[in-house]
Amino acid sequence: DSAQIGSSGDSAKIGSSGDYAKIDSTGEDCVVCCAGHDSRVKAKLGSWITLAEWKLSEEKHRWIPKCVRTEYVDGENIKADTWYKLVDGKFVECDD
Image (cartoon, rainbow, N blue to C red; front, side, top):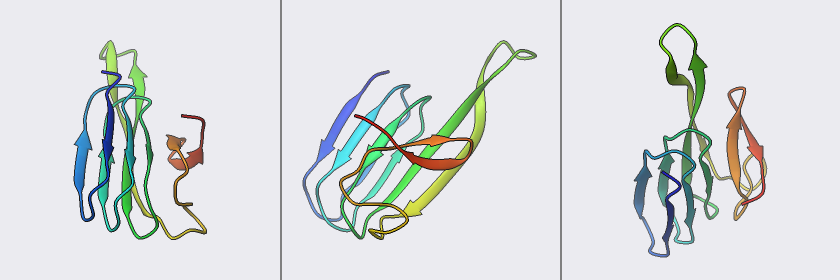
């Protein structure tokens, strides 16, 4: 939990499943995945980012996956070098 991972190499493939993870990738053409609760990610133009969103299940008494989404960092819909988190199934800019 609360992992802070960075990558500076091109074509990196990085993943984290811990809660509150923050991954910052500065290489080109990277694939970055944060699957833990309330995780955040940022990457360079031309990279792909994946985040998972979780919800608390009262029935199961634990957090369960609500949504997993992947986007291409194109500089318009998803900006380069900008932190994102997943809120209601949408990528939302956020503070680090």
